[in-house]
Length: 178
Image (cartoon, rainbow, N blue to C red; front, side, top):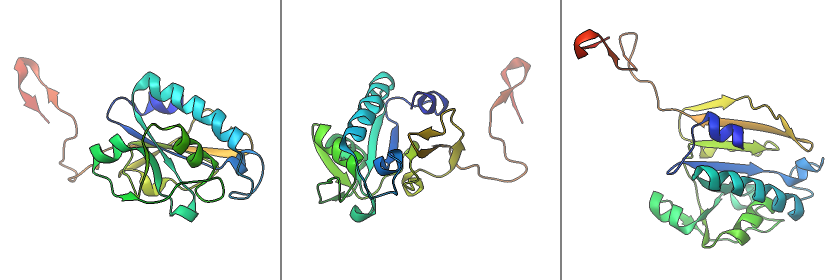
């Protein structure tokens, strides 16, 4: 998580989506052996990094809750997200989403989000919740337990063609050039 935060230049106002299969971490097939203790330990680590950098976390639920996201109510309202009704539990939502729901001060579920970055532990398919354009990151740590780790950050779309300029360059005398 630290590597993602540094590489993606995360800070206040940014949102990171977290998708986690505690079953995969434990070496089981996704959705079959959710583990609250694993979720609790992960949450502590995610929260330490979040507090250091100041970004917001959105925890993706499993497919049984249509991959809705656990967010703090303030985030839902600030971003104008669509709220959906459910309370994630280990068997419907997943252990990680359930843990976040219990730990947040005012938890709610958002139908979707466009996050600035994300981390996927156990191939939970977070891509639907990332802003365009997602840039895959090759983190130093490729596994948590038995689960594969993937991460992405996002960047603005590059528009234009071969004559487009993407960075301001200055010549002597303060004039802009291409």
